Image (cartoon, rainbow, N blue to C red; front, side, top):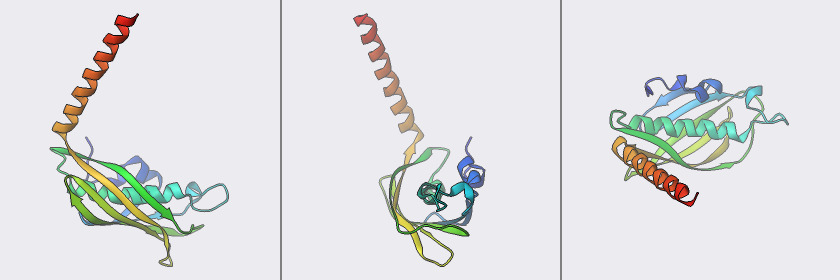
Length: 156
């Protein structure tokens, strides 16, 4: 079972050495070192690593809003603009809750270099879904699958 109290054990966070420094349901901050593992072949910070840091921050915020006895949270949309890159040091990722409505959260996200300059920013959306709704969706998927299989057998 996923344990939201231990976000560092998540494989991606551990792999990129993402460390949470502020964890509130309306604000999450984390750092990530710029190592050779997160560089593009030309030696600059890979935008995908930066997006992963920002998604990790927003997702952690959504986890803090989720009742894991009854719900699960998912990232559903990222809109990130890259402004500059980095080569060394570490970056700070930040997700601020902008809106929380009908189970969907919009986070303002930004990544900063050690000088405080914005590397990337944008928005990230998360959604909290009840386990009941997830079970209903799975039941419908299974019904559609069985119907399709029956149609394929009848055509054979």
